[in-house]
Length: 389
Image (cartoon, rainbow, N blue to C red; front, side, top):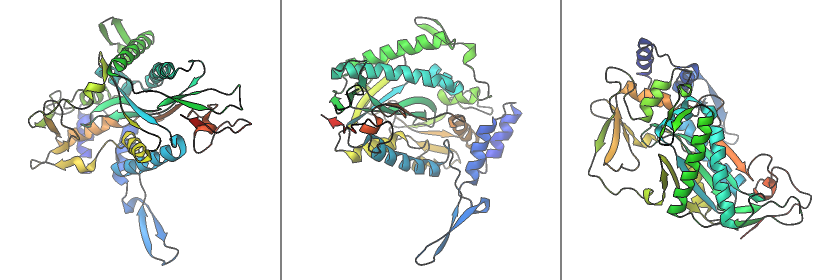
């Protein structure tokens, strides 16, 4: 990174595509992360008086594996101990078609309303499954908006940890304890139906906002979907696995393959409609705190795994996929400058919140203090304790 970042900047400027300031700051702060000459603390042990110098960290969200790993550990511990507690939790994962991934990257303000649509669809389905009226049903969900795919491609998708059940709002009857009504895992047919509902409502909303045009099957992004920060070319090349800069720009990235294996364990349990894919096959029971923490670490993990990153004998950057693709692809490769271009596309814009709390976990939720271990939030006079069934 240190050796080739100036080349990356020079190549973009030669192509009249300067990086926006927030992306430059991400790279330059990362290159100073953990380097003593850029600042440190002197730590002294109170008992043995041993001294150690601790370099300042960048604390950025996009690139740094070290700061990302620290944030993952802290976030997972917080979610397990302070948010979910001993409750059954199911992971729902929703991915989007390529055009919508581009739209969400170039127009971050589109993500919030779409996430609201997704939550309303799933919450309504959970209420129906639990037999609780929708107007009194209270779900709980923490959403991590991930920006990266397994090949360091730009892939904005939602990882949602839902309570595997529904509470009934008891604010009008404060003496009644909140009770969690359990729900069953969705079937493949139900996931497909939910994905279809989500796809229809999301596309309808985006069309009304002017970001999508067309009718029925012929729907495409409008001109207003383009970003205004000069990053669109880098984003699209990352989304579509293309080389972003230089004389080979537009060509497919180099991949290494082996014999194709199984199609993948997730495909059979996912609902797929028009590029939307909804999966809900992983859950943790109330007593499986270790499994819940593993789920929380998974959804809060950093984009780059240093263990899977290497330099090929030819000097190219090689990244190993965690799970081989259907066609047998096991690794992707870039030249050093194009690798940096891929990382640039992953940097989140400033003031874009990647963690969202909804339902009983929302800051002003009526039941938040009663269902979370931390007990923060509005508390009724009765201080009722939730009952799980």
